[in-house]
Amino acid sequence: MKKKIKCPLCSFEFIPRFFHLEKLKYEVSAPVHIVNKFKYKKINGGFQPQNIVSRSWVTTCPECKYIIKFAAELGKKEHLDQESKTIFHLREFKENGKSYEYKFYNLDKPYREAHYYNVDLIGRLKKKIIKAFDDLVLPDWGFLYKTWKVDSQIDSFKFLIRFLSYIEKYIASLDISVGLNTLISKIGALYIPYEIKENIIDLIRIREKAVSQYYELNEKDEKLLQKTYIELIMELIFQEMASLHLNEVNIKEDPQALDKELYYLELKELLQNYVRDTMYIHKETSQFIITMLNRLKITLG
Image (cartoon, rainbow, N blue to C red; front, side, top):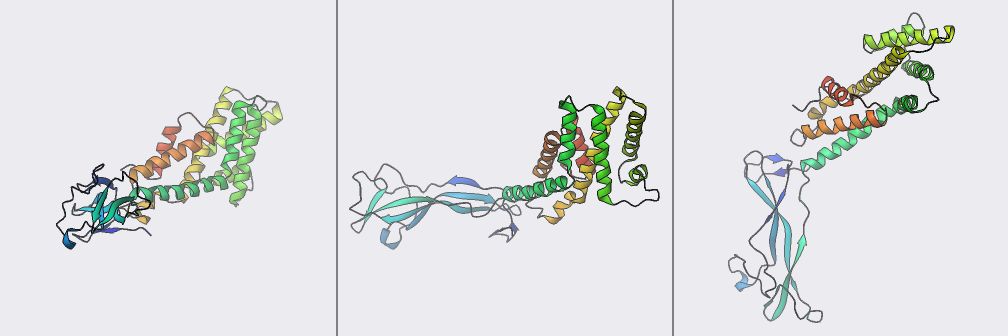
C-alpha cells in the first residue's frame, strides 16, 4: 500500500517525487555555550523550547504547488548530568540553575518517494521476466550458441543438429495438434513470423542433405543458421514479454508514482544484458531491443 501525503492546503493526495533538505535559521551556535539565534517569542517565562527543528524535509504539492515541510533533524532539550558533564560542554545553557543542552537526532523521510516504488516495481518485474525466460530454458539455447562460437570441437553441423533438436523439444512442449504429424507441419503451425518458419524448414533440409549425402555446410548455410537462431530467440523473448502485458503497467500502477522513463530504460537494460550475457548475441543487440520494446508498445512517450 503506497503511503500518500495529503496537502494541507488543497487536500490533494500524492506520492512525493522527491524530498530535499532545507536548513533552518534556528540553530545552535557552537562553541558559544548558550543557545542563540532562536526567533521564537518568549514562552513559559522565557524558557527555551523543549524541541527545535534545525533541518526539514521539503516537498511540493503537484496540484497547488504548496511547499510542505517535515522535521529532518530534531533538537531535544536534555538535562545535563553534572557528574558526567565535561568542562567544555558545547551547546550548554542554564534554566532555573540547571544545565541543559540540545542533542540533535536525524529523522528519516516521513514518506517514501516515488523512486522507491519504481525500483520495487521494476525489481519484481525483472524476477518475473527472468523466470519466464528460464521456463523456456533459453539459457540452454544460449549456452549451445556460445559453444558453437568458442569451442573448436563444435562445428556448424553439430550446432545445426542440436539447434533443431531444441526446436523440436520446444514444439513438443506446446502440444501442437496438426493433420500431418510431421515436424515441418508443426513448424508451419507455430505462431512465429513466416520468414523464420521458412528458415527453420530450410535448415531441416540442410540437415537431411548433410546426413544422407555427406554434404558440408558452407558459408551461406552458416549465415542462415546464425540468422535463424538470432531471430527465433528474439521472437521467443518477445512472445514471453508480450504474455506478461508489461505495456499495461501504467494502468495497474499509480500513474503518479510510475516513472515511465526509468521503467523503459530499466527494461531495455535488462533485455540487452540478457541477450548479451545469456544468449550470447552481441551484434545489433540494441536495435533488436528497441524494436522489440516498440512492438510491445513500451516507449519513452
